[in-house]
Image (tube, rainbow over all chains, first blue to last red; front, side, top):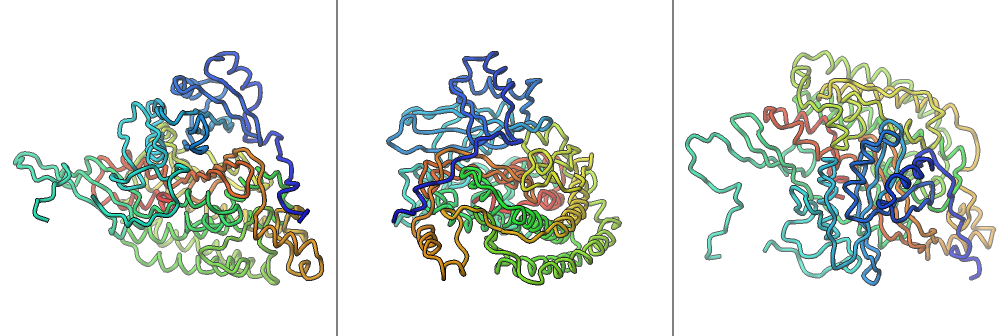
Length: 178
Length: 405
């Protein structure tokens, strides 16, 4: 089977889309706060900043009121698990959007398995509340300073975190309230 | 069980003679919670002091399921998230996949996508209007809305074979081209539809009871709306002119002539007016899209990703091999991550896909507009009467299938 689909997948499109952050903004931010950005990834027309977790609240608060970018809208927070053998294992992605300039940007925090604490950004955007609860519920990422960090989708007495790669898809134990 | 069960603190009976507050649980079986939403309400008389939404009753682990399904199988799951807007969900998902693959979608497929997304938006708004009015006490509107929605579902059925779960958009284009005679049927519906919207206005907009139940109720300011991440008609009802179709255009929306309705007041009435006007704008876009339909391919030229035509499989060896491999093994998607937002009927629907290079995604996350809009319910509900809660929930247009996922 020489003609399998896996042999020549189309090359990814890395040209800038309208949703992309223009590179002058990236350069300006890197110059102003180099300690906040440990890596810049530009791929598929999206810009990602890898931010050390101790700076995530400062970076978000700055980006929110930054006159050149005005990323005033937190579109989404989502976790991701790279798998139990990977280190750092967890990612927390913050998708920011500017309601006036229409740019988008992604901030990424990387976490080790033993220490899944991230400062909460609920003080910057109140919408972060439910997103962080969801990430806590499904990945076990603990958001320090969150006002009400409870499970949101699964029952309060659920064991484990369902979207971790080592959590089974199927189980044979019927669920019962303890 | 011999021991007495311990009650959660909010349900404990406390003897406080001067304290008039009480906690009640509204839902998950309450008919106006649109599914299985539960609200924990602290009331002082009839006034809501505190409202806490409790979700998760419909959690089906869709995001987990995506990781175990091939990319093309995931489309079927998206149908079941926001079941009033399945084509919008399909679109966000397949476009995220297409961006990872770097596919170029033919013009005709793009136009048909716009056409169906706008029809679906009208259908979604019709269900909202019918149920919203029903919650407030106007039953007649419901029947008129569902009469019109039926016509749209028939059009979707004609094209895709499905009514509620069409799965019509595929990675690389469409499932198949439109059937013969579709343009005429669609045109027939579009000719009649503006009259139906006027009919809804005569039923509701001039109704004094409806006005009193909605005007000044459940207000949220523009700053709060952004802070709480509201999107779609809820955000535009607070006076912010933001629409992803304009802000980050996709599928060629930049070439269509339409307005973005906004209302300044931020109350239930404002959100009602925004959606009513949006139906007319969607109608305008649909008419334009139908006029632009030109013959052409509806699938991208990517034989390793897009299923071949049935006819080609009967005569071409390579088409048969491609079909077998795509179905049996799937197609590899380059490693990387994308977040693709679209303007669904309820707001910003974003699909985040993280690929590690295989035929199955490593992570799929859906930013559901209903999920975020519902999280702002306490801001709108606190200080209002308990009877207004149903009006506020109705004005948010939540679909629990998407919230709980």
